[in-house]
Length: 158
Image (cartoon, rainbow, N blue to C red):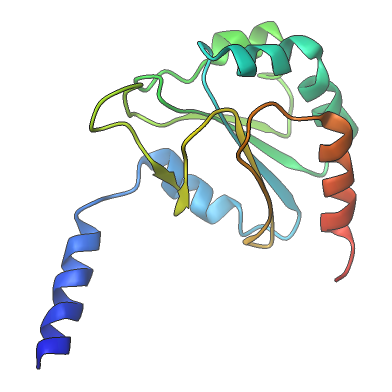
């Protein structure tokens, strides 16, 4: 009986923390059979700005039209950063979706998990195929040659 009570409490406890609309949308989108890239970023972040200024994201998005890219602005009070992505020509790309988490940059309400993975630094980039996480780059700026290799590896049969 004690275990049953614990399970009921656990289920009730986890349902109190509803995923944001962006997270709910992505939870379904990453199940697609092709590659999906979830890029967590913010326009105020200097590392994120450096990635955009390098032109690496635009080149990568254009070179991989079969990959869906999800740019999710986090820790940005619900702002999606579309103006900055437009400046770097990413907003108009057919394989790019722009989303925003509603959470603040600081404080107790700042998200610490997204898609059930820890989020402690931005930029953070995750690569999915068919709902399976293939790579999680949680350290900061992307090296685009490495990202391209990860795409090739993720597309191969294991």
